[in-house]
Image (cartoon, rainbow, N blue to C red):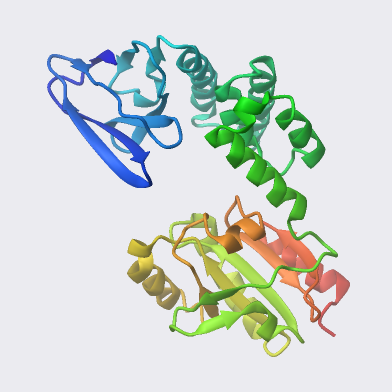
Amino acid sequence: MTGEIKGIGDTPIQFRYIQTGINKIDTVVAKGDRFRYVAQKPDDGMFDIFIKNPAWRGVWFEAGNLTVSGNIDKPEQLKIKGTKENDLLTAYNQTKWAYRQKAIGQSAEVVEKLNEEQKLKTWAFMKLNTPSVTSMYLLNGLTKDPSLTIEDLDTAFHEFPPQIRESYFGKKAEERIEIIKNQPVRGKRAPDFKLVSSKGDSVQLSQHLGKYVLLDFWGHWCGPCIRSMPELRAFREKYKGEVTMIGIGAEWGEDKETWLKTIEKHQANWIHLTDFQFDRGEVMKAYNISEFPTYFLIDQKGVVVARENNFRAIEKIVTETKVFR
């Protein structure tokens, strides 16, 4: 890989990747805006180039000579060309960032409309460029969009040839599709689980059946999650004795102290659990958690009553259906 990035001068560039399960970072110092790097093979076929943290660009590991061009002030828009998959990924990223530029300073309504347009463009790009590893990579990302049907996702997946379905992102997409097929929805039994609490004891969901359970999938880093804390406290006070509240944190191991302090700061005096695997743990997968916050209301028998991303929607369901009598 050779590159010229305007404005980078003689500063370090990081290349991050996972190799044999270990996170690795290679550093190359640019000279007069120019650099050269020989990539190491990553486990997932992709490495990331960081030129202005936290901005980065993904790069496919392919045999060939890659060229990188762009500006340090727009690191997300680097043009990486020279191989089939990187040409495709660059073409897609240019359209993606065009939508993000349009969204700057717009109202929430306009941003939502632009996001919907971008999703449709992504789907169209994925279909147009099937079969390619880039399209499978995009399909894997699209599996986290709750508006797409499992039928469409499954059909799109099986349009790829076996060698791409067996690739790293092919296996990830297949796993996501199976998770969606088996996810707990209204009327279906909620998967049981056991995790360690913020107090150090082991807590199992089935131990709390016999009355309603509210699961709150959240994170200390999640603004909407934190803004919902006062409503959650009020809900707990109002329905004390009728519902058990359990928070499940999307946290890493290094976030433990911050997670505990956040619970204390916001007086979230209910059960809190985490496996310190962020959103990659078995519980997050079983419940198909791709957005935060996500709430599940579960009845006395362990059956899902509701799944929502807005807590007021949960309150409305409780009020209108009078589930707590």
